[in-house]
Length: 165
Ligand SMILES: Nc1ncnc2c1ncn2[C@@H]1O[C@H](COP(=O)(O)OP(=O)(O)OP(=O)(O)O)[C@@H](O)[C@H]1O
Ligand SMILES: [Mg+2]
Image (cartoon, rainbow, N blue to C red; front, top):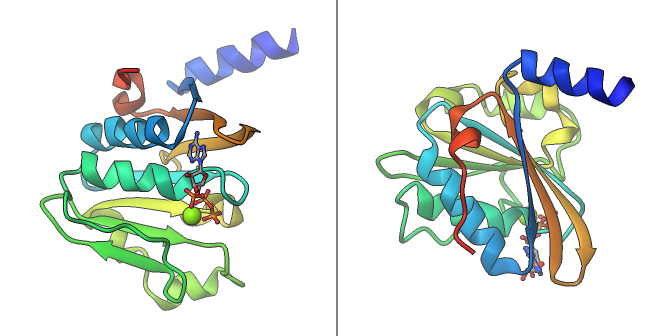
C-alpha cells in the first residue's frame, strides 16, 4: 500500500516524526523549549505554517531552551535574521518578505549554520538553502487556540522530545 510504503521509506532514512496537539500558546512555547534543550550548534529548525499559527511563539520557547533567558524574541522584519548571542547562539530567520534566494546569499547566511542554532520561519520558501538534515516543524490551525504541530527530522533530538502537559 502507498501509505505503508511511504512510512517504511521514512524509517529507512532514520526520519522520526512526532505529532502534538497544542491547546494554547503556552503549550507551543513549552514544546519549543523542550526541543531547544536538545539542540546543539549546527542544528537547523525549519518552521512551516500559515500566518499566526505559532512559529514565533515556538521560537521564543526554543530560545529559552537554549539557555537564552533574557532574549526578547521578536520576528525579524526589516532584517532577514535576528541574532541572540549566548553559549549556543540562536539565529532567527524569517523568509516571509524574501523575494529571491540571492538575498540570503547577500547576507552570507551560511556563516550562521555552524555557529549556532538556526530557526527559520517560512522555511518552505527556500528549503534548498538549508542542510538536508534540518528538523522541520509544521503548524496547522485547528481552532482559535488549537494547533497541530508535527516535528520531523533524523535527529535524536526529535526521538527524545517529550513535553510535560
Ligand atoms: N496553540 C497555540 N500555539 C501558538 N500560538 C497560539 C496558540 N493559540 C493561540 N495562539 C496565538 O496565535 C498567535 C501566534 O503568533 P505567532 O507570531 O507565533 O505566529 P507566526 O506563525 O509566527 O506568524 P507569522 O507567519 O506572522 O510570523 C499568538 O497571538 C498566540 O497567542
Ligand atoms: Mg512569526
